[in-house]
Length: 496
Ligand code: GLN
Image (cartoon, rainbow, N blue to C red):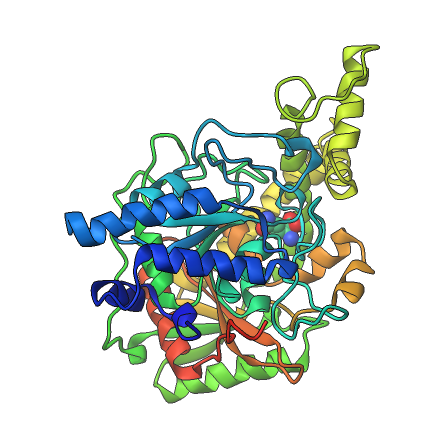
């Protein structure tokens, strides 16, 4: 069992064929694992009945029908901002605490159609606003690395529950959402792979929106190979989401003999920023040298607008949040207080009780930026800068001396302790934590976080690869090469 939780999907399927393990067995072990590690608070809701039923269906396909699906008997976790029919979907907020959707998000529907077994819904920062998974009505999620009851590190966020579900061994893969880094950030801090696909490659239908122009479902897993398997099941056009890329999705394939010598990788100098720990810089240098030794063409490049990106992200985020959150009015969905003096007072009291401080302050700031007198000064200006940030990427990928991919850190340090993280305001934390991740969302390009090695505190340090739109195949082939070169010591799932 110890080894089983570190098996890849391929190895699990082999074990099913050889009957060393069966889907119902494995699902049961995953549920046990989730219960044993409940202190980590990865799940807001364990879906034991669904998991068991899904396991039984997979078992039948394996041994009776002998016609299996690509993710049969594979345990998954879904961030609790993706709608799941007849299963509560809370966004970790009072506002949606009792919300039970009547339909499935496309990502979940596709995973189910591929045979995956749902272990549970994963914890997050309220409405995915955060970088720690510390602001949830269900309490914070704890990082399994170096965990002890009195002293533990944050999981990163906002998909911290999904990252911990995978790194602690309860799930083989999990779905997060990524608006400014929320899949890559917790993946980096919890030592797993975190993929943010190209905007529009994976449907947002049923993902409760944060920032529609940047949101993408993300994938967390313990190997690049598994990430590819999951991506191949969920990507592609969806009639329910008009922003999905209409082109037919070409399955990503990993090549055993992938040759790094033809790949040009840029190191953007602007990502060396203030506050980056020297251990992160060393890990970055270490992988640059490794790739150079393998004959990849490494070069310094420049993305001149990087330093303004975080401010632009923050303005646009808050503007879209202000408009998205308007749907929660106490009438149609979610929390409704007993206030009965007037409709306005009902709105106000429902929204003030339903949202935490972070959500309320983003709505407030967003509405301020969108006031007629401020609109040009903030929103329009931020949109113009977003275009320049996008053009920086375009130039670096397509210009003279262009590169194929970019290599940067994912986070500026290893996982901070809970106390140090919550001592700063959410806004300041995001400004620091999202420095390297949000530019990819602003440009809509794919990015993947790969764990590299452990810091002196024994915590994961990770790097990020970014590529042009729809370059997932190259991105993931290079990510796998890095994964093989660094041989990261995934968590021994039974030591928690
Ligand atoms: N930390 C960022 C924010 O709070 C990222 C959120 C996300 O990607 N969901 O906006």
